[in-house]
Structures are given as C-alpha cells and as structure tokens.
Image (cartoon, rainbow, N blue to C red; front, side):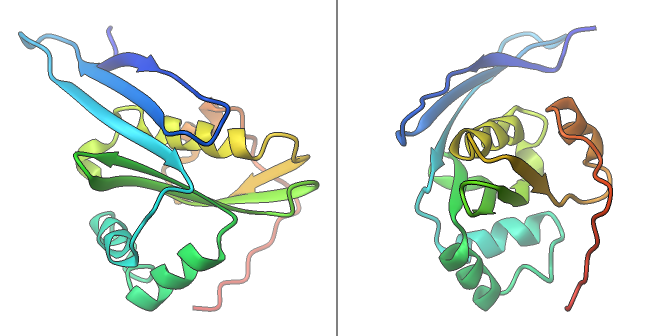
Length: 163
C-alpha cells in the first residue's frame, strides 16, 4: 500500500530555512502540491502560537502570557509555515553539551501526516547535534512517531506538573 504522502525533504546545515515540498499521491486523480518552509529560530508571534496550541486542544498552553514566555525562554525554536500561516512548531531547551529537552511539537490538524512533524523534529535534532542526551515530552498517542525517529522510552524519569 502506498503512503498517502510522498515527497522530498532537503536539509541545510546552516540557519537558512529548510524547504520541503510534498505532493498528494494515491487513488485520486491529480496531485496537490503543498509547499512549506521550515525555519530554525523563525519569527513566531505569541498570538499565532496561541492559535496553533488551541487548534490541537492544548488549552492550558493557549494563553497569550504562556506563549510569550515560551517563545522568550526557549533555546531553539523551529516553525513551519504554509502560505505565511504558522502550521507547525517545536522548541528545545538545552545546555548544548550534556542535555536537551524537546517540547511542544505541534502541527495544525489539517497539516498533520504530511511530513511537517518529521521536518520540525529533524531541524531540532540538527540544532542539537553534539548534545549527549536529548529527551522529549509527548502527548499520549504520539509515541509511535518518536519511536520511528529513534527515540526510546526512558527509565528513571519523573514529572511534576504544577498547573
């Protein structure tokens, strides 16, 4: 069975935008070409991040003060845009030597399963190259995505949520 989306993803080792082009393939006639630009440390307004968080039901994240703090205090920010609209986001906190944590990997529902999450994750990992241990926090149901990209379930991790 053919995958519903196929395409080419090109990576750049610098800080220039990564260009991704995917096209719809499958039983339907014709092809729909969708172009995204994924950029490292791209400019993201707190208001558009709130809209993206809200689109996936992350309502505790979807507050302007939270989004403003997230953007101001992250070490690496990667965003994906289609037609100027923010359609994907991921961020990392790191000391750039021993540890890094990837957080808030999110893709707008209408753009999921098109390679954007993979592009964001690879861009984040590219920026974290050389860091000895990269951890991430994920929502239930997304585990297979991270396993597919080489992550393994951790042992000895504890979480304290202070909502």
